[in-house]
Length: 211
Image 1 (cartoon, helix red, strand yellow):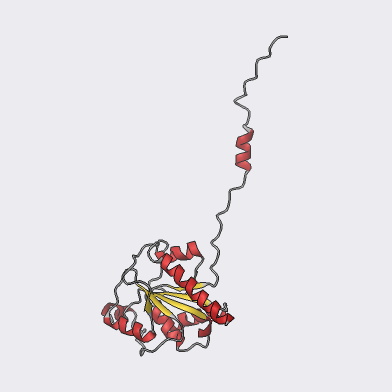
Image 2 (cartoon, helix red, strand yellow):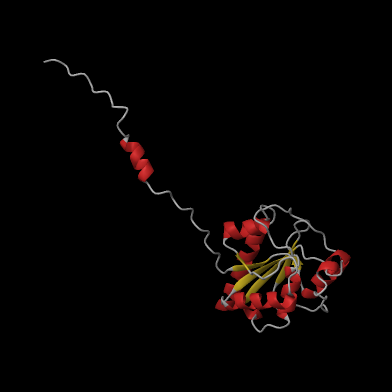
């Protein structure tokens, strides 16, 4: 019997494997799972651009930003209403307030009846409202008389150092530091510490509920 030589593939014929690869749907990147209990974020007065550590925390870890209408010249009353609506959507939540956000929380706590929903507030680099450069732009944000907050509050320094005026406020609010020194402004700096802080707060709340 004569051997039949193997047939060479026709270069003009389509490659089935290539067709299958082309036909396969492109996988859609999974959306980040929102944290539970949720964390609502309050950016600084200039907002948080795409490359900012706070934006990346929101995108990577499912944190939820409290929006308002003008990050360059924020109105305290408008932003307080947005915060109130965000809090009312949840039975329990954490707040993460960057820069000016600390003063927004301070004002909101004086008017709301929903502070019981807030498991904790974490302040990151709170600004000094009495600084001349700040007063020039945020002249409608008059400093409020210092008073204790009815919720657990901590402070994390990433890129700033507290001025004497800010430290006086933090003492009055009852804020405790999460770290002895600034942890760095990038996306990594302070995240593990922050995550552990929330986990600890939630464990304490769970024990209190069971007692």
